[in-house]
Amino acid sequence: MIPVADRIARLMPAHSDAAARLHRESLGEAWSASDWARYGADERVVALGAFAEDGSLAGVLLIRVVADEAELLTIAVAATWRRRGIGEGLLAAGLAEAARRGATSVHLEVAADNAPALRLYRRTGFCRSGRRAGYYSRPAGRIDAVLMTWTGARPGDRDLTDPVSIRIKKH
Ligand SMILES: CC(C)(COP(=O)(O)OP(=O)(O)OC[C@H]1O[C@@H](n2cnc3c(N)ncnc32)[C@H](O)[C@@H]1OP(=O)(O)O)[C@@H](O)C(=O)NCCC(=O)NCCS
Image (cartoon, rainbow, N blue to C red; front, side, top):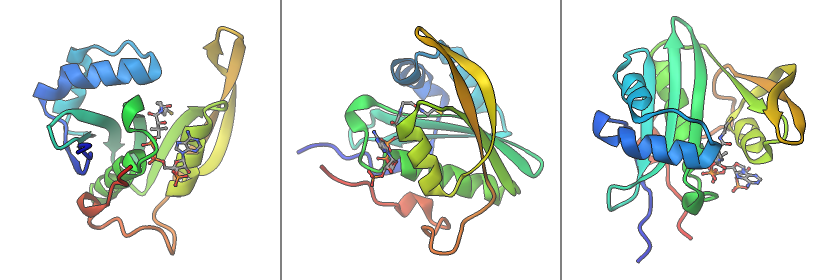
């Protein structure tokens, strides 16, 4: 039976190595395990993981909340777990927790060539709020950053009040 990542829970210090590995493999970002441990221990940061039945980590999310504003620091789903609703589940859970802590807007920036992430954010209710020209560098040149903002669930959006119950699609 294929294990299904059906649990979204707080990232604990014990998950820092796995989070750093997953993040590096997904985004090439060189955040160390101690960076992840620091985010996990920061009480302003919503740090969530999506876990498979065997306890392995399938996805991670960090949102920093400061007063009524929040910032999506990162989201990544392991390549073998993509396109099953885990990213959407993590984001919904993270937004619900940020809103519960008082955030009325959540901001993010995403590379203009990252089509999967752009679609995920649009689908979750983020709207474009700006653009930074040439913000990211790629081997082939520079890429703009798209700035996006979420200001709360829209009518018809998924009920975010019980994020843990969000169902992950089985393949
Ligand atoms: C972006 C990312 C987190 C999405 O995670 P995921 O678990 O695969 O996303 P979901 O399965 O929840 O997808 C939800 C929706 O997002 C969109 N989406 C996700 N992956 C997509 C893809 N490869 N192509 C087009 N749309 C995609 C779709 O609208 C999808 O809904 P659908 O499957 O019903 O069509 C994942 O691709 C990832 O980790 N990418 C590398 C890291 C990254 O780029 N992070 C964002 C940095 S800003």
